[in-house]
Amino acid sequence: MTASRGSIRHAIRLACPPDDVWAVVGDPPRIQEWFPGIVSSSVEGDQRVVTTRSGIPMPEQLLTVDPVLRRMQYRITAPMFKEHLGTVDVHDLGDGTCLVVYSTDADPAPLALVIGGAARAALANLPHLLGLEQPAR
Image 1: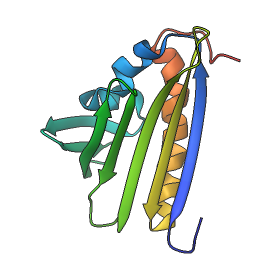
Image 2: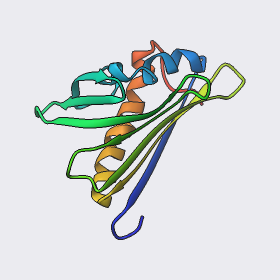
Image 3: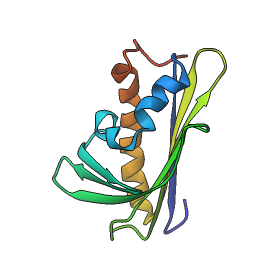
Image 4: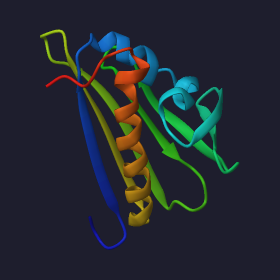
């Protein structure tokens, strides 16, 4: 982390095929199903607006939605951010499990910490949403 920019990364290993996870995290309108604090979303082209539990709309630009790499990237375009990049990757570990990695970079740095904390909770929601007993070890 620099004085103005923050970077956070969290990951979870799941005992299921990566395509099952990608079907959820790689579908931009489904974010409210797995990301806490988001109650709704709308997508038009490469623009997504998520609405937080407090009623605040957060505009975003979808930069990458790649089903081959199983990578989604977006940037929050709300004025409180000077710069933002969020990345969700779903990696096939080749043994029937996958690794889901959520990274966020933001300026100002405290917003990376806020999003990073929510991203950690979002990843923790995935096993339940996918009907898994717990994360893979």
